[in-house]
Image (cartoon, rainbow, N blue to C red; front, side, top):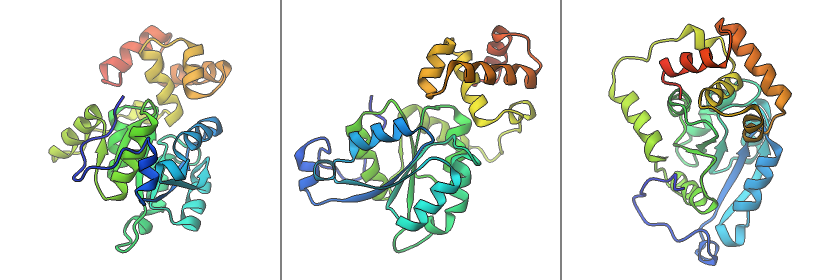
Length: 242
């Protein structure tokens, strides 16, 4: 899958030896609450001599992210949307002075399992330069990182449509009080349940246990005053969350 839009200038193929040999370098911080995922991304893109990407720090929650980003001042941060401590939007808010630095700005690229419109629009409004999903290939991710470093906006085609639609309208999206009752993780589980995923599939995709999935589903049903997953699916579909 290719999650990158066209850049203003072509980038050398980053999955080959030419990517590292070209002399281009970018310092990156990985922010994701799943250690296994961070390890996988590091293994995929962190071969600096080949990709030109140097991973200079990692973080698993909002506080860690802000500390590491301030300490390392990377060119690009790969930022998960759903994080303990307030989510990716909170990281963006607390790092806004670094994004505004005219000489050496820190730029953010959201990398998330979620492809929900509210998640995409939320982090873009917070200052992220792009948004790609975790199904992206390593080569395309490296390419996207360099494009964001250059100041380009990077989205998959479907996600770009969400942003264009949102910013084409002068009206702010309506507040959904029911949806606001849910935590970000509960929203993730909600969307996957509504798409027909089994508990085991959700657990595997979100790197959590089946019991944790069950707990999230119970909390969602209670907060939304629904009785079962079929009602939950209808609720989510009516709000275009799937």
